[in-house]
Amino acid sequence: DAGVTQSPTHLIKTRGQQVTLRCSPKSGHDTVSWYQQALGQGPQFIFQYYEEEERQRGNFPDRFSGHQFPNYSSELNVNALLLGDSALYLCASSRLAGGLPTGELFFGEGSRLTVL
Amino acid sequence: LAKTTQPISMDSYEGQEVNITCSHNNIATNDYITWYQQFPSQGPRFIIQGYKTKVTNEVASLFIPADRKSSTLSLPRVSLSDTAVYYCLVGDGGAAGNKLTFGGGTRVLVKP
Image 1 (cartoon, rainbow over the protein chains, first blue to last red):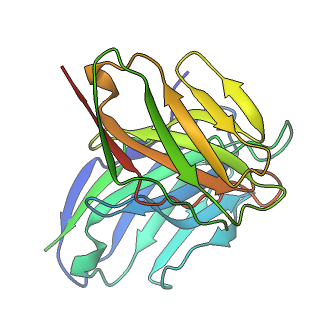
Image 2: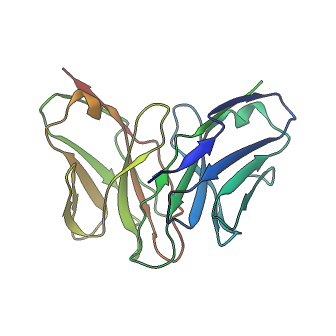
C-alpha cells in the first residue's frame, strides 16, 4: 500500500517564476492538506482540499493556489515566487468522510523548493 | 485553534524514559490532542492521539489530566533513533477537517 507520494523531491526556481507541486494521497484517503515548513520551523498550514474544493485555508496569500482531482490527487501552485517561499512543502492526506474523527495525517516526504 | 506551548529542547540518554509536556490552556471541547514525530528532511509521522485520560500504543503513552489543559507524551526506553522533533497539536479532527497547527516542537536529543 503506497503512502503519500510527492513530486518533485527537489527543485530550484528563480524569483518571479511559478511552480507546481504534486501529491498523491494514501490509498483510501479523500482529503489532502498542504503545509509549508521553513528551515527550523514547524509546518504551517496552507490549505486543505476535499471533494475537489478548498475547504480551509491558512494565512497564505492568493499566490498560493491548489487543485484536487477526481482521483483525490492534488497540486499546489505558487505564482510570482519570492525568496521567502524557499521551504519544504509537505502534503498530508487523511480520510474525512466516515469513521471516527481523527487528526491523524499521513505526510509525504515533501518537495524541497529553493528560490534564488 | 488552541495554541500549544512545549519546551524547545530536551536531552536524554539511551534507555531512559522521556516525558514531554505540552500546555494548551484554551483547548476546546471538541479538540483532540495529537503528537507527531519528525526527522530531518522527512514529513512528520503520527505518534499518538487522545481526548482524555490515558492512551497507550506500541511506541508511546499520552497522559491527559481531567482539565485537558495540558498533556504529556511519554517515550519509554528511548534509543538513539528517537532523536527527532516532537510536535504537540490540538485541533478538531472531525467535521472541520484536519486543519492542525504545528508549533515549534520539542527537539529531543538522545545521547549514548
